[in-house]
Image 1 (tube, rainbow, N blue to C red):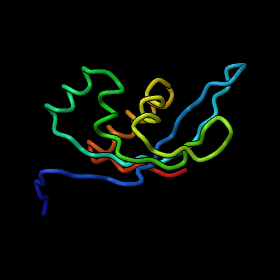
Image 2: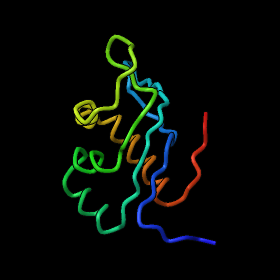
Image 3: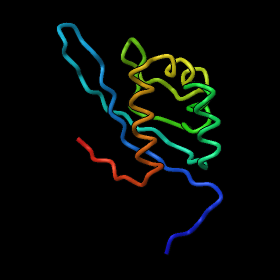
Image 4: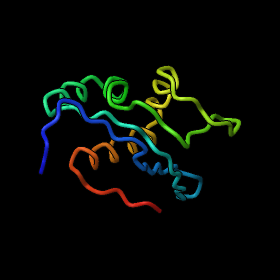
Length: 109
């Protein structure tokens, strides 16, 4: 039976990020994000505040993200804010979050 709960979190949700390369090529990278699901009204309000505001509230952790030297990048508020300045990250994160919100199963590569 469906349960209406006050707060729901989803861990290790697969996210694909498409990064453009020279010559019209695109390379996909996989990572996972932990999400906190919010209600419809809160989602609309957060969305209107921009990517940093939205993802600062709904992304609660990650794995599979590296820094420029290839080292694992720790999940911190500062690193998340920096990631939100990258449009490929935000496009992948938003696509994944919409799947979580709608209950659409994510497929792994």
